[in-house]
Length: 213
Image 1 (cartoon, rainbow, N blue to C red):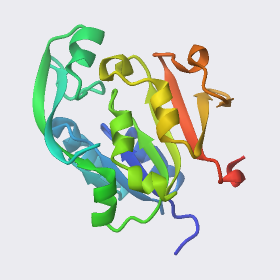
Image 2: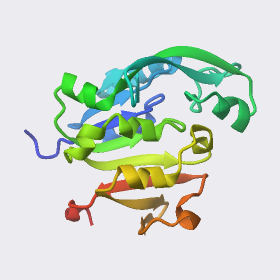
Image 3: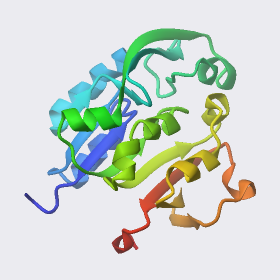
Image 4: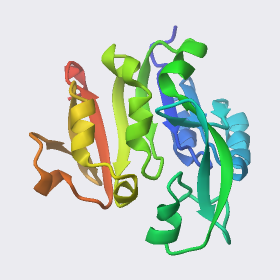
């Protein structure tokens, strides 16, 4: 197997801009993209066909279930769609529309598709990031995920998730805040520096992977 091949999961892929960039950087990547919104998935699927990666019209969470996703009534298929109604109606102050979606646990998906290791797990799910990781507890426990890239912002107010929840779940990871000119290491948990509910892109890297730095 080509050593340049990396396994990447893009959860909350939207129309596929992140996945597209990954494939441009490494056309041999084995990439799985997930987008539960039915309208947005149609656009993602076209990008997936053009750039030769796999796209799935499902959401990822902590349980296998049927759920709902909310979006703008006047602009259905946006980048802000969330399973939390408050993201649309409270944060963005717009009337919402709703779609039924299927949600799967990442552990179960990985078993079904025989994915033994994930090099990069990117999560952009408008407040649902922690539940995505809870549904990957076996993969995390068995050191099967190297790097996790996720957002932490005001959506977490409505999902009622603290940054400390990520620290407690990802005990074998070091945390870094992503800035335009590089990464800043986040050492011991301190709410003054971590509980910032705005504009945070976080990279979590397994502590045993020294070769990344």
